[in-house]
Image 1 (cartoon, rainbow, N blue to C red):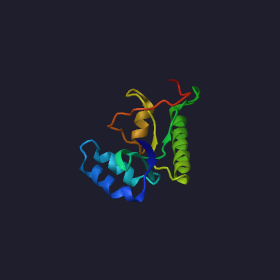
Image 2: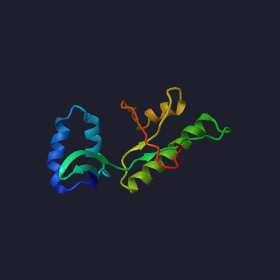
Image 3: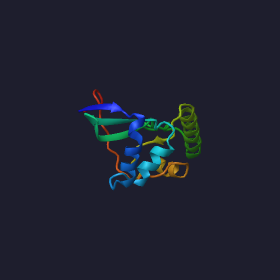
Image 4: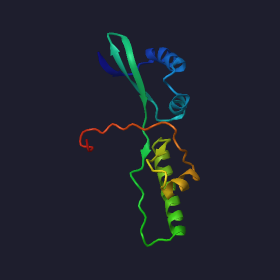
Amino acid sequence: MKARLIEPKDMEELARWAASSEMVQVTDLEDVTRNRTAQTMVITDDDGKVICYTPFYVTTRLGFTQFNPDTDDREKVEGVGKLLAALVEFSDAHGIDDIFDFTVPECRLKHWCLKNGFVEETRTAIVHKGPGKGK
C-alpha cells in the first residue's frame, strides 16, 4: 500500500464516492469546489485499488491578535480592520480563499470578526501537530 497524488483516471470514481457518501458533509464538498487552491488530492492505493483519498489546500491561519493596551476601542477597530484588509490582500495574491482562526466564545474580537466576513464553523477542528510542534 502506498500514498500518491491523484491522477486524472481517478477523478470520476472519487467524485462519485464523495457525492454518495454519508461521511462527506455538503460543506466539505462546497469548500473543495470553491477553493482556488484545492488543486490536488492524496490517495492511498493498494495495487491499483484506491483505499481512501483526501483533497487538500492552503489556508491562512491566524496565530493570534494582540492589541496595544494603551489603545482605545476606536483605534482597535480601525487597526484590526487594516489587519484584515492586509490578510485578504496577501491571501488573494497567493490564491488562498480561506482565512481562519481559533477562538473562544467570550472573545470580543470574535464578535467583530462575525460582523466582518468571518463565519462560525459548525464542524469540529482537529489539528495534527507535526514534528517540533509541541507534541
